[in-house]
Image (cartoon, rainbow, N blue to C red):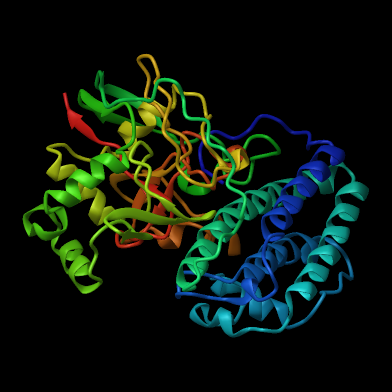
Length: 437
């Protein structure tokens, strides 16, 4: 939902296409939850993690609250208490259950959450199928927003269950079968590309509230605006586990001069010695994956590092992190393809060599940038409760770009701005280096 140039299309998407997209996204959520037991779905292993059951219910509450209740006369809520349990951070919509205590909610059961989803799905499909063009044009932006919102929570489900299973001393696998990862004949080796500076346009030009099926961006991606960049260089590939092992071996976690003060304090307080989920077994590094504990592949992109670790590594390597404007200037000319969730790998894989192009710019790992998460020039949060979606978080966080191995590919674009606090590590975060030319 970005401000900027308004869409010129006035006719809504056909109801059938919208219903098909709705069913596809909603069924994929259930596909991701299918390997989990009812017990798996209730655990909250830290305050930033939400139980899988909560994610499934929250995205359902979103459709019920923003689409069904305002646009279906006489609509009856599935349960009057679900708005309290499954509202996340929409203060304007009333009281909410405390986020750190979501794991205490054993009822409703996972099965009842499934019944709640079916109830709302039936009502949504009926509404879209029966809507005339005027009503369809009104609800289409809300449905599209809800689908992208659910895709965000699909990624969160996988991030969160990985932390849940890592917290279990048995280290169970989310999926027991480990699909074969096709390692390219020629694995990318580190190289650099130089890009001329100048004036460039970044951000989305999709107008707030005007996005439709197949043309979407969040409000924080706009307005589209001009930036001035100097000449710069960008690494052709993300930093690998082998690169990061060299940083560890050279005392990267024991050298305060490499670290921002807040990062050093955090690393010392939490005894960081390696990326999250890494541990040594008989002198070899292993890490937790969604397929259980696996040896660290030195060729794959390093993952689960905080901004503080990314910044320290970049300084150790003699380079820096790219700004988000530099990253987007390059990504805007690259197809959105790569190792996304549908590949089934569910972990970063060694990137294939590219000729004169950056490898794995999309997929595999979210790439930290040097840019704080702040509003673009001219940004205004949308009116109403949906205005709480992004704008109020534009403080004390850093921007990540590109998507990861747990991100739906259709959710990604070059203007997409993800954001996390600089100490966070449970997201699939990695590093790509930049330098002044």
